[in-house]
Length: 381
Image (cartoon, rainbow, N blue to C red; front, side, top):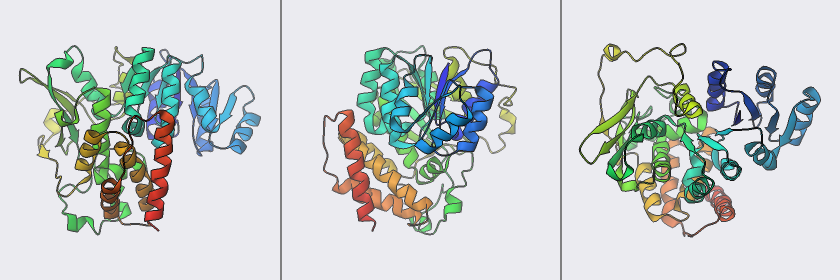
């Protein structure tokens, strides 16, 4: 029984594809969405969850009238309820942003295994989340393609023998651009990812390389490895999803066609693997006409990568500041209130001026996040 937080988003809908093809193995305990009520209703009718959660009370009342046998919740408390409900074995957290933090903790404390696609939560609250995961003896199974790849490459090997993690990046739509060229890119261009079909926010993060920076911090917490032992490598074909180098010089990588259903399915079925070839063709090495190419990340143009390394190294509230400021700035860009390059330029200002706090509780992380967001909004007036 799986509860899916964020069932109408890109990850949530692909997760339901996996469940749809494996009804003998999985069923849906609960679903949640913010505002895509029509799509949620169609999911309720198909998968018949015990409970659902929406953002607004009026939507909850509407769904309750329509589906009388379904428990309906709303808001923050509703998310916490379905993340910890008794008739649930695993929680897929595919929420966007910091609202995923408290449900992740709630799921861990309720003894639920977690399939994780909400990187912002680990960026801002990684120490607190991983402490709760370890304390409650639950599994934290990554769904991001890169982190799933790393997880698979670490299986059966001693963590003490890891020399480095090789975190791949497609380079996004602006690979090879100069800083000057980034001045004039449009929203439509930034939303056109060359390889992956994703939500708008993560697509913009990929274009700015903020996403790769956040993934550095996520990997640091998921795999308990220093950020300096994580190397970003640009691999435009997105065939090698990431790799691990060991002390003896061996490099183990995970490869496959770009399809998010594969890491989702692996998280759901771990340690087994599902038959997925009905929905995905086998990787055809001979079709890679231009081969597989690898480049160093352009950290002179995409300065957001170094911002993430710095935030990870300095710790405390620095990652909270980076994540919160980025969410505000990306939202402004999506509403065409600022230019694309303004995301990076203003993140640099925020990080330079940030006054850090340390040893934060979950409540203090959330307070600091709200404070940073407000500061950024005022700065952009």
